[in-house]
Image (cartoon, rainbow, N blue to C red):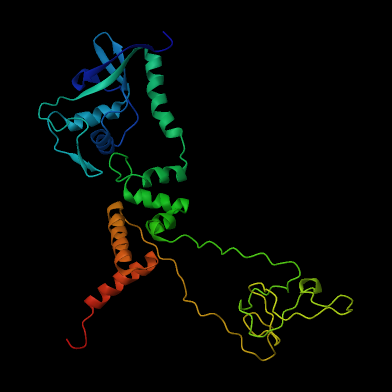
Length: 319
């Protein structure tokens, strides 16, 4: 016999299953048991049938985890999305007796050894896409049943450069989108050149300039000179047309003039790492303060919350 032959799939009491002699893979039994309790058995073990004997080829550490659980109610429950989940093995019933869903094969000794070795080695030989792994873990409402802990997730986020995004992502839903630019009106042909810093209003009495063809023709027939305009021609917004030299924003500076710089507050990033429950609490507080205080941004709402706490916690001079 050179290859394994499938026989059946059955729920087998664990006292009828034997460990593979000399199995070299020592698994993390607590982590496997935690996964079974949270997720239930999602993959069959593989056993070799020899007369009345069933020997585990793949899944030895799963069998050890079932032995660790034992019969009866383990008392372990989980919370997910506000719902309480029972243990995926015993379902929190006192009458529980451990069984394993088992795929049964027949094979010779050489093939049995190869299956055991390949099952252990191929799981170790793979590699991970760290960014995809971080995204999978970050999307869960808890790490129970994944074999990962929060320290490992933090290290993974640091390694992928996603820690800053993950720590401040909770603010994104409160940030107003960038304002859309105001569309500009097209400049009529022949109008004076636009100055983007000019005032839109034209000084009273300022003469209008433009091509002669744009001025009303009121001369009598036979006159050689066209009549001059008596009313200002329409002007384009943003065009400087006054008689004086333009002195508004963007005007040419004279030597010795001081340079006026805009006064803007210094902006700095602010980052934290939260548990999911803590993040949801902070989000709710910011959203409530933003609605109650009429703040334009999440940063202003968060600052108001912190300022109120500091004011309440700081003793006044009268005390």
